[in-house]
Amino acid sequence: MKVIDAKGAILGRLSSYVAKEALKGEELAILNCREAIITGNRKNIEEDFLARRRRTGTGQTGPKVSKLSHLIVKRAIRGMLPNHRAGRGKQAFQRIKCYPGIPKEFESMKKITAGKGFKGKHIEVREVSSK
Image (cartoon, rainbow, N blue to C red):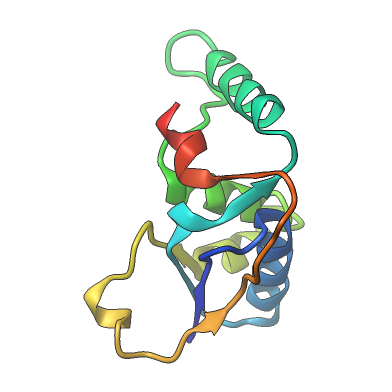
């Protein structure tokens, strides 16, 4: 099992890497999903996420976009998979686990650091999820 620390990682790059590894058959755990970053203009990103959340269907129909930070990351990964509802995309998606912090079972394990210092315009996933 690969354990990835998402602190400071760019969400799109992290998602594509995790999707490729899951398609190869790797079990993956992504930690610190709250601290992953989305690049771009803060105002535009917030407006985009709020517009998606307002766009729910009537009653029980969807699409529904979660406010939880680890589910925002998991949905981004799902978008990188070929078909998340059937076949190998579904199997790959089941091999991915996302956590907002660091659970006790992963504290002692070696982690792959996914992010480096990004200096451009960005916003953290936790800031988007709190809106």
